[in-house]
Image 1 (spheres, rainbow, N blue to C red):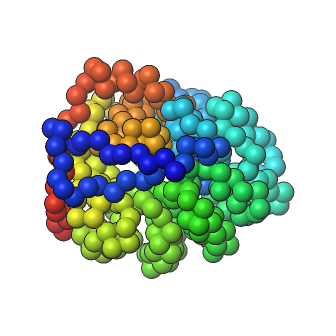
Image 2 (cartoon, helix red, strand yellow):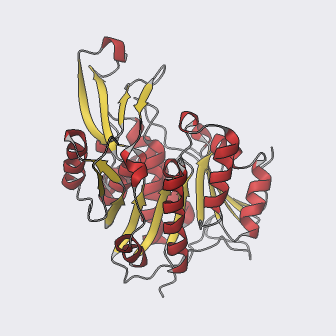
Length: 352
């Protein structure tokens, strides 16, 4: 096993307590398997107009699973997407775009019933930005945890699970089986809560599903709203993660990001670019954070790389196609300092 050490986090100094490490076996075939939806995105054109006033629409592949997979691939990862697409022209469009990005589709499944690949219509506006998502009987929730997926998990460094794959009981059982298999085969499990209220019947159902999944995760990622769906009190959730030897990463928008590990926390700021639209940042953040952490072993550096990727995506047209390369991220970090809304390692849980 190759254990990646944690670099110094604040002015070259560190307390006797240490932020928890994740260790990786450098011989694994895959950097990550990503579990979640892939769909068709349409953007009203010209950029900036409301959907009702669109003259044309620009197309792209989208969905949180596809976005994260593409972010990780552009960052140099070997990535396979675990999902399902409908056997129709929309599913074929998504498949072709994923292949063009270099995403391995050997684990992609196909539905032949009345299930459909998701469609999103997303306005490119910094304010008053409406996104309409059609997920009627979504194909991606038909994925099954088969022997081929289990074998791939045992050969992967990470399993990245997006919360929308937990919506329906059948899909949830399959995804939980993947997570358990990953835990049993030293594959690190990342859970992106990825909460959208309209996907769920009620808060109670969401909380129950999330709580089942978090028990099988090494790292839990979400914004403050998403963590409040999981637990009423953020401080209590952080302490629970500490007891379970889990890492917790809270995205705070303009206030940066906080990682909780035991009784320690790392607070980081943001890279401030002009915002074109508000979506896609979370997927860019997570994909690049994971890839950088695998190579650097430095949580603060990895979070800052993820933050740079997030800033780039919201400053550009599109979503999956806006995911930056390693060189684009480096250029931004070389030209701009991160704005330290918070900084450093602290011995405190969040106040609520």
